[in-house]
Length: 554
Image 1 (cartoon, one colour):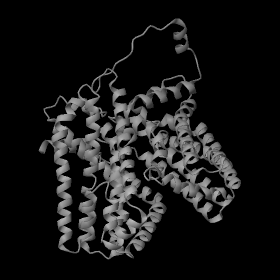
Image 2 (spheres, one colour):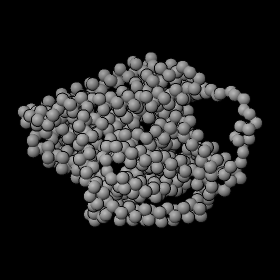
Image 3 (cartoon, one colour):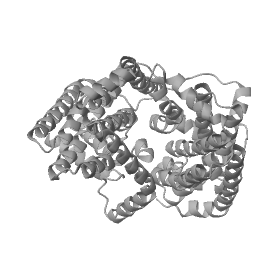
Image 4 (cartoon, one colour):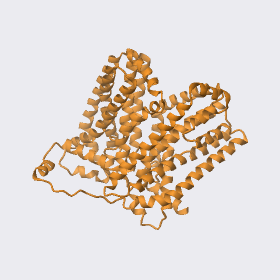
């Protein structure tokens, strides 16, 4: 166990994320945290107001504890889903694996240290989602100091179980797909299948529970049984009910019993992880760096086509595409997320047998001009969010790592290199929006002109966020990394880009809901406004971008 802690400490210090121990970076981290707090303050304020409203509504029927269970269940689901991405990159695709395997360490030592590192980084998104809920619940319920002590313990232990499940799923697929020459391809396919299995499992569970619980049964359950709603919302992760009950009953001795039971279940999952991981991890990670190539004869015509001259922008953009598609960490975190976000947003519909019929009733509102105008603003905000979430443009410079300086030796203007790096993020953002519009068309059945105008109004916004992302990465590139996942997963630039989304989308939604503009009016306004902003940013990149790029040092 001592070796696991020492290895964890070493991995954390050598990292370049929030928990790294590099000297002179403490004030920068504090400044970044303060900037993030200011940027996300409007979003968190709305979140807290929503929690207060839910608490008041649930407290009227004595079911306020369901709010805790629902928040914990959602947090666990997010950790489970996104944890698969992170586990694959940290456990298998990190470059330190090749250096750790020859050392006199047990597989459990390496696996335990990597689990703790992953757990530490999962606390950041969990804090954004769960801490406002826990604090608001405590204030509204008038809880004492013991509640906040229990809340701290529950918060620290909550990610353990979903992260263990994500780790075991990832290790199982990596163990099964060890055969074959194209190891990276098999592992990518295994990762995709694992994510699909998690999503499918969630949909099946929700559909079955929704089929059993009619409105009448649900009403009768709530009226006849205390904490009945809590039992309902924690079905997917039953352990969260123990944590929620520990907080809800923190003022009596029973709360301590629930807390101990919650910790005992989490410890049991951790022990199972160590035992199973010790048998799965080593066989799945051996030979992880080996690659295979196809050998074939190339004709003269094919050789001329491959070596023919073409536009530098297209050549660099093609290179960026190949790196994104061939590197597992980049594919799972950047490319795949573009196709998953539209699906995730419609999972509640797929999870209920009557979901399509219910949502189609909502689609009838889009027949009205004012409602359609608000719908365009919402679609615009979603397009900005999905584009920023893929992290393609905000890590375009960082992904080059130490090889970035090769760009300075090539006889290609910096402006063309920058333009090529904007292309992949823009294309993926447009693809995400197309999938979103297609899914909305199938589910909501809105007017065709609404879908077309929502797509057209979002295009300049997608370009805008990608230009903002490349500017952020030019000014603050993260080139010093030892694994690809650190370039995309532990990169503060993505948070700065998300802050730009909040600053841009929040006023747009506020004005849309307050002013209720027409469909064509808001579509034309958004398109023209952000097209002008795109021209301004392009001009800034052409004039200042090469200067910023030239100043980047190792």
